[in-house]
Image (cartoon, rainbow, N blue to C red; front, side, top):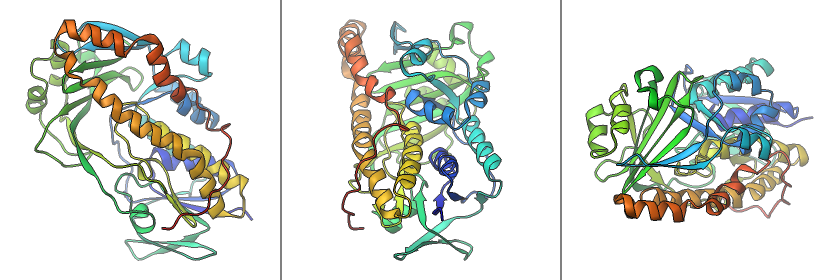
Length: 406
């Protein structure tokens, strides 16, 4: 008999894992603490290493309907607006990797994943199910919910984010540290922006102590905005904290008028303190494992947080299928396959933060020399090729390692 799997958390990683597991023949329940699914989040970028998984799950047509072909990736200087091209995102991604680079509105992606799950199994998603504790034996694992219910399965996957209850109860306690940066985000109706800012490119503005990213989402009807600035004195790690346009403008005082044009059109901009966590050396315990932000939370400076969760979901399902009947061995093989890559992404993302915020960007002359050095073509290729070329459905599964202690 196929193993049954409980997934805690109906985020991008949890839903991808659910789809992948069902397609491998497993029985899946996805437990989501929210009583209703609402639109949460702003823009999200997925490179070919992630989109290939979604397309192979049969979601390609739905994704194409909510995106526009990306025009490319470029850097602009914070005060002058000077522009440097990084790489092509459209044709080149398809030619090199076989799958597109997509810039998405996160609620669109989430809706497509939910619809894919419900089409496969209408009863798989359980809302209003908050996991509060986990116990396991040699033969099964049980989750206790806040309403007193207990559910059992052969395996549990913690896809419950940076504040993971599954991680805290079975793997390790959370030890976040403030990164020194806060992030602003929101979406803007594209018609509210000047024509010069209504293109299809993904734009990275970089400057001393801050950077801004914007790109078209929701079939080109919105522009997703993320602004990250080094700042002390505010440490709330929340995706739903609302700030003000005035505060956001103050954080980007002196920046190019295009940035201020974006910020002025934000409706209730959200902000959060960005935390760093040391990479875990182990994220599995018996019949329990983690994925996505629960396993390897990262700063968003490589645009790979969601991509890692999607990769996890694919590899996790393959490992459970390969070691069918031995859940602990499956999870150890999954972790061993993923650990080095995800740890490297966490570390490289932190390195990119310093690259985006370098003090040499303060003036145009110093910035030109710095950008030509740091974003030279061969360096850019080395920085991104290993990310984009990864094939989660084909990467060899590692041998299960000796199980680590909880």
